[in-house]
Length: 295
Image 1 (cartoon, rainbow, N blue to C red):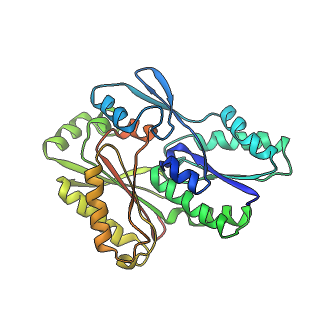
Image 2 (image 1 turned 60 degrees about the vertical axis):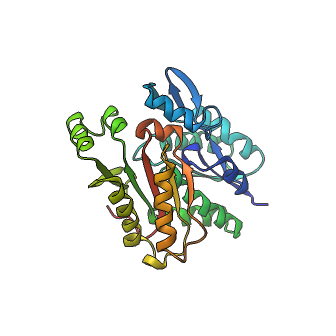
């Protein structure tokens, strides 16, 4: 049994079954739906279907990150068991949770000076962050020490690519990420923005593509251009989607046909309630390993 545990936040958007199978621990973010607080607990408190339907019906959503006290309470039992910890956080480019986890680590290091607590900024989100955790589980299972595994993730995390598109601009407009004027024009022209995550972990618009069919092909083209070994890519590929499974499946089918050496089938997950509170329904996100993100 490993002498350290690997951990993340629920915003890594993997399934409960996946977390349990890989022995990955997680702590939940929170969200408010019409003023009522729930844990972002992988769709257990509220199903993803009901959550996204509530957004369509006009529900008000807000999110809150894990705070310092919650991290202290979460980490302490592992440390009392004599375990070291690698905790990987949602990107600092879109959340302040890395700071909260770091403060908790500093407080606990004083109480448990013999233990190692690594807090890593994933510079990623959703199932891309989840794919990073899956690799960390591989490293642990291969026998890497806590120091070696943490160092590997820090060195290679920018090789994890995140590409997103949305077919519904409603909640991008509502959240102020797209102006009302731009959103109106985009909706009228059937524009589907293509975005990715830069080397600072921020979500950056890259291209405005007209029609769902074209953006589905465009996102797969970005994988071909950036994945390790191009069409010979042999790593894993994850997708997350917010109430638009058919669009995600269309992307997955193209990838499985174009990349014959892929490590297994494309895994499709749901965008969780934290990130989904900001994107709304209609977002598809694609994740794979490739050349280092530099901008």
